[in-house]
Length: 449
Image (tube, rainbow, N blue to C red; front, top):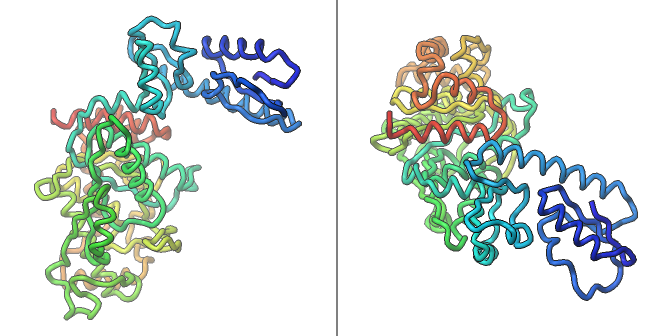
C-alpha cells in the first residue's frame, strides 16, 4: 500500500509502485492529493485506487482484499497454466511487459484487456492470454447442442448457498460452453430476471467484441401451454435466441377445457386438476423432444438445482411467489429420466441441492423422503391429476419405479464421459471453476463415445 500526498516524494512512490508490479506483489494506492497535478503517474490503471478519507481502516481493508484476490487468482492460474507460462495476478501493461523476452507467454485473470489496448501491448512481442481466451481458442464443441437443466433449488439454503451462487455458477458454465462453440438449449419460460436474461446479455456483449468469434445463439424450447411469443418479441430475441415452439399434445384440446386452445393465453396449473394435467402433458412433450437427439440434436444434459417441492419462482413478469412444480413429477427429475432413457449423458452438479442432489443421493443408495408419493402428493391437485393420468393416459410413473431405474444404473451408468472418480468429484464439487473444468473434460470426449 502506497499513500501519496502533496508533500511526499511522489517520484519515490512511483518507483515503489513499479517495483511492486514487476515483482507481482499486491498494490493499492490511496491518494490524498487535494490540489492540481500537472502529470499523473501513467501506471496506476491496473491497481485499486481510492481517495484518502481520513479513515485508515478503508485502506487496510482494501489492501487485505487485494492481497486475498492476488493469492486466490495466483493459485487458480497456477493450477491451469501450461509449461512456459508466467502467471500475472493482474492485467498486463507496458510497465510489466517491456522487460520480458519476445515470445514469453503471460497467463492473467479474466476479463481480457480490451481489443485496442491489446493491439498496443502486442508490439512488445509478448504473448498474453486469460483462461477464457485459451478455452475459446479450442472450439472443440462447435455447433454441439447442450441442454441445460438449471432452475431454482428447493433446499439451496440448507447447502450454505443462495440463488446468487447458483446463477453465478450457471453463467460460468454457460460462458465456457459458448466459448467452446457449443449451442445452449434451454427449456421453459424466459424469466424477466435471473439466469436467462443475464445469459442473453452475455451473448450480446460478447458478440459485440471486435475480432472475437461470435457465440452461437441459444435455443429456447418453448412447450405448450406457455403463451406463444409475438412476432415482435421473437424479433427482439432473434440476435441471441432461436425459439422452437412445440405444439399442444394431440389429445389435449378445447373438449377438455376451453382454456386448452392451440395458442393459449396464460393459465395457471393450480387452477384445477385438469389445468395441472394439461401443463404436465405439455412439459413432458417438450422434455421428450429435448431428450430425443434425432429431433433436437442435443448431445448431453447438464443438471444444476431444480425444485422438488415448494420453491420461490420468478415469473416472466418478474413477480416472485412460492410455488410447486407444474408437471406430474418434479420437472428436472423428469428431464433426467428422459435423457437417460434416450442415452444422453447427464452431468449432475450437487453443490446447490435441488433435484440434482436428490438424484445423486438416490444413485448412492441414500433414501430421500422427497422421492416418495407421500411427499409429492402435497402438490396442488396432485392426487386428482394422478387419477386423470390413470384414466386418460399416458401411464403414470411412480416413485418406487423411478428410484429403481436410477439405482439400476448407479453413478457409473448415467454418464460414460466421466470416470468414476471424476463423476464422484462432480457430485461433490462446490467451486464453479472445478465444476466447469470437469464438465468440459467430459464433453471433450463426446466424439469418442
